[in-house]
Image 1 (cartoon, rainbow, N blue to C red):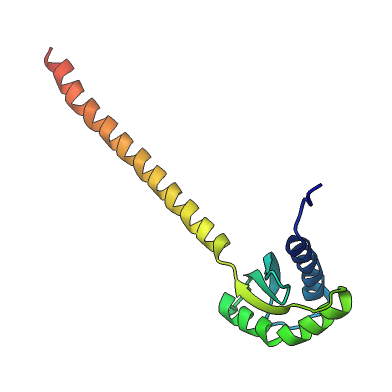
Image 2: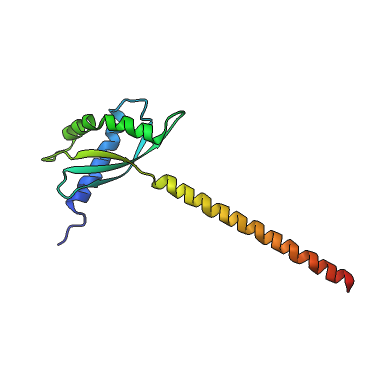
Amino acid sequence: MSKEFSRTQRVSQQLQKELAILLQREVRDSRIGMVTISDVEVSRDLAYAKVFVTFLCVGEQTPQSCLNALKEHESHIRMMLGKRIRLRLTPEIRFQYDSTLVEGMRMSNLVSEVLSEDKRKQKEAGREDEQPGSEESGEA
């Protein structure tokens, strides 16, 4: 009977849950803003965890400034995480900005622009077809 999920996947899911709770309730830093954990990748030996985050930046905040502020809290977050989960070794946390949301929005905007440009060209082509056609019908 095979396992549905590997140990690294289960640990990854648990880390994502616990980190979300910790960042929401325990970490008090106005520079961070609102953080969303989109994914956690854990190494096979469970020693390292890449935590992919996105930010809702307000005012002068940028994703890079929020990420830098979050990286300052890595060791403190790891310590709190070690108290909440039961593993032999608490993974070393490395926060990385997840740009997939921004890239997805950019691609969606590009597709929308192309579609609207295509519709505009079709309308112009339709009008050009009508103008010569109306001259021919006027002559006949």
